[in-house]
Image (tube, rainbow, N blue to C red; front, side, top):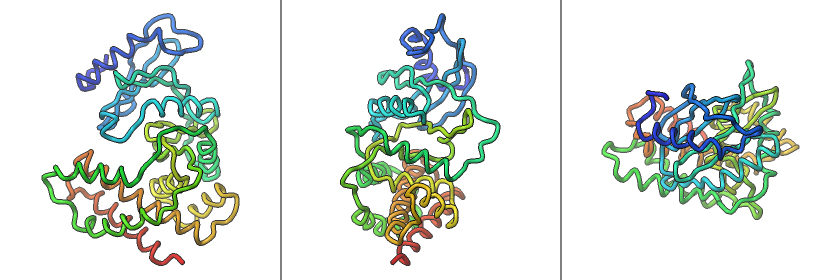
Length: 296
């Protein structure tokens, strides 16, 4: 076992490995897999590499899903559909009581330089997946994080408070699609992987029905794309050069994403406001808000 894991996580990992006969492996495993290393870990979850004949990834929740607005049942079904569509690893085992998920391990290609066209096609593939009953409510997510911040001992950065009213007004401007699509909602660079020469989407825990503009905003904001690469992404995704209303919709959702991201860091990771990246992220939010002001 892996000594670096917190004791409760270690215990749930052991229980998950003990259920190996229930894993939907093809071919079936002949004996219990063993943990060989930690791929990542933090407040949200821990990911552990295990192997037995093949390699697998076990994710153990670090948070109670309900506290973060997650729906593991929706994630499981969406992940299965995404695997069938060839854009996500195969899910093998899911246990909500243990907070564990097992998937095939995708060996990363040596080169991970990501192509804008590939990202756009990945997004289009995600948005074609079957609908699920769980919907992303940005207003509810903001309220949940703000509620958690009420118990914070350190004061919030003053610049963030100055942006709050403007962001809440944007919620009213965000167009809710008549036919929402299944969105990944967390397609950051860390959750995209080239394996076997193609781009895959990882970590589907935030997936829900919503606006495709939020998924686009996550990529643009998370990758810090400049204007040229943003235009390329929109053109590849939309199939035409973005018009002024489409640019404005992207900036509105980008502001919402950046605000939610800040609340997440402050509420869940309890990062003190004096940490360098918090002011930088506030500046990034202010830049997006300025773009909205200038948009026709």
